[in-house]
Structures are given as C-alpha cells and as structure tokens.
Image 1 (cartoon, rainbow, N blue to C red):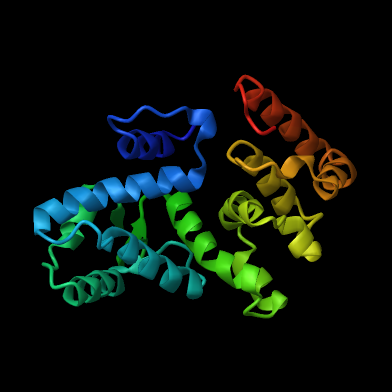
Image 2 (cartoon, helix red, strand yellow):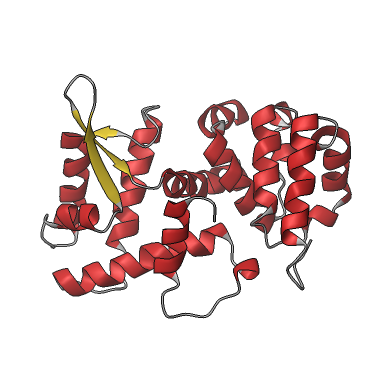
Length: 239
C-alpha cells in the first residue's frame, strides 16, 4: 500500500470488515470500494442499492475517455453530461455529480489553457474498469488481436489484465506474444504477482516466461524477486 490513494480505497471498501490482505485481489478491493460509495449514495438519493450507479458512471466515463485516447480525462461538459444521462436513466437527481466529487470518485481541474476537465481520482481504478471491460473481448476473441493490443497497451491496463485474465486460465503474455518481451509487459507481470490469487505461476508456460524473459532482464529480474519476498510472509499464499 505504498500509494495512499490505494490504501484509502482499501480502508473505505473494507470498513468494519475483517479481511486478510494476502487473500484479497485488486478486483475485490475496487469492487468493495465502489459498492461502499454506491451504498452511501443510494441512501442519500433514495434509490435501490442493487442499482450500482457509481460503477455505471465510472465505466461510461472510462470507456469514453480511453476510447478517445485521452486516458482518464474528459472535458467537464462531457463528464457532467455522462453523469446526467445515467441519473436520468435511473430517475435520480443530477446532483450525484457533486456527490461523486465530494466522495473522491471523480475530481476536476483546469489545464494550462483554462479548460475545465474531470478525471477518475484514482487512475488505477479507471485502469481496472477498462481492463475488466476488455477482458470479455480478449476471452471471447470478439475483436482482431491487433485492435485489442492497441487498446490495452497501457501500463496500468496491462497490470490489471495480468491479475484478471489468469482467473480465466489465460496468461496475457501467451495470449499476445507480440507484447511478451516488452518492458511494459514484464513490469505488468511483476506487479500482478503481488495481487494474483490463482495458481498460475506454477504452470510450465509461466515458469518458462519467467526464466526466459523476466529474469533475463536486470530491471525486471530484481523486481520479480523483490515481489516474491514480499508475498513470502503470507501463509497459504498460492505462490
């Protein structure tokens, strides 16, 4: 939890709950945080808690911003329009925009040109939402690989996919060999080790990738062993 924003997500998502950190995936942390904020917003604006408006807003925002190659940033008018559209769909007040700002889900700013913009406060959350959306396209092969690679070849998205896809028995470096030796992919694979809860590392293909690619590069080799040491203190960890 070197990132204070990520620590905040964890604390708010697991408030009043006992949970061993070693057994929690990033997906569970993000989902718990979103659910906690949505529960509070549902109570404030009187809608059914089962309708996850917070997730819907973040997903719509993220797909549009990443689709425009702006990565987690939209002009304020567009962002407010997204929130108002979701609010109208569920018959709730458009004041949920101010609520999402106050809760730290969204934040706004002004660029050097004086233009107002909005972003998801914790970029890792936006990366996760986008990665989760792309997961289905990767699993079901609903788009050409070249198009998918162009969309996912971003450090944070690769990191999240390296956590999400192994739960489906898929290693990202196997699915897209063109990315396997890339520095961003090696870094993403290493980062995923800290949060993966599957048994994927014991697969022959994964061991081969580690031996032939990850540890063959000094930068990724050091991080790989550092991360193994970090998780070694947890009993019953899959690695």
